[in-house]
Image (cartoon, rainbow, N blue to C red):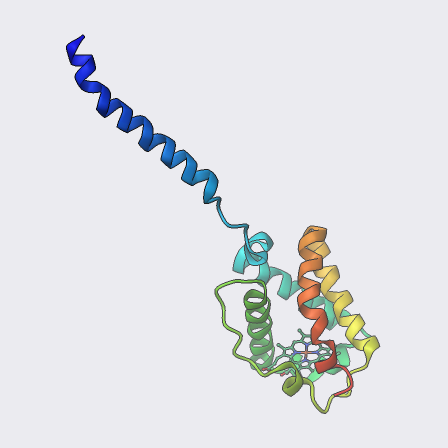
Length: 154
Ligand code: HEM
């Protein structure tokens, strides 16, 4: 009995520590996953970008714009890498976009609204081909949409 009484303070302390830890768990919940994580990280983003580029190349309404790019494997690779970095960085991933600004990249091309919409359609098709859920699809489009004024009519 005496032994139990002597152990009581230690037991009390242990209960306090466990309670404090539980409390910290509820007060410090895991942060919400970023869009990058929800999209499936770099491999999933790379696969979507590859499908997107395939859709663009097959899209007669805009593929003429990319004829010189497709003819040059180095340019194709550079565009692919820049697009992957752009989506990765824009969705909160650990990449850095090292390409030109959207204005610099598209100035002199006189891209129309219809062409911009066609390209976004090719991206949506790629996202659908990979069953990306509506929420993540809309979040990604909301990141790219504001780039329109820097791309169209430049
Ligand atoms: C949200 C829409 C768009 C995004 C995010 C985007 C993104 C990019 C990026 C990251 C580059 C590479 C920049 C660099 O070389 O440093 C690029 C280049 C280019 N973009 Fe866009 N773009 C968009 C819309 C369009 C549209 C609508 C067209 C034409 C229909 C277009 C045609 C091109 C072409 C021809 C290049 C040059 C590729 C090369 O260097 O060979 N882009 N774009």
